[in-house]
Length: 116
Image (cartoon, rainbow, N blue to C red):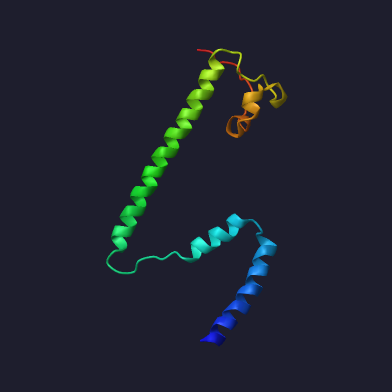
């Protein structure tokens, strides 16, 4: 038993040092440890697992859509008064839009309104 622990420790030291060479951030290690503890049910609970997974996915998808709609609505409200809308380049952007990574990444070029 003690030799097994010693062998495991030696393997871990080697593997861990190689992992740090490729992914040194602590989040990478935490993610690998979390992923290593995953399991998939292989008995009759599989259909329950699939159903719960789909339900969770749909719930999170709804939350994401609502959040994106809120951000888009906020951006549109800021643009309606005309003072908040950037001109055509990112250098012309107001500072509060430059500080927002989502809004900064958007193309704020103005396009002519289509003729009705």
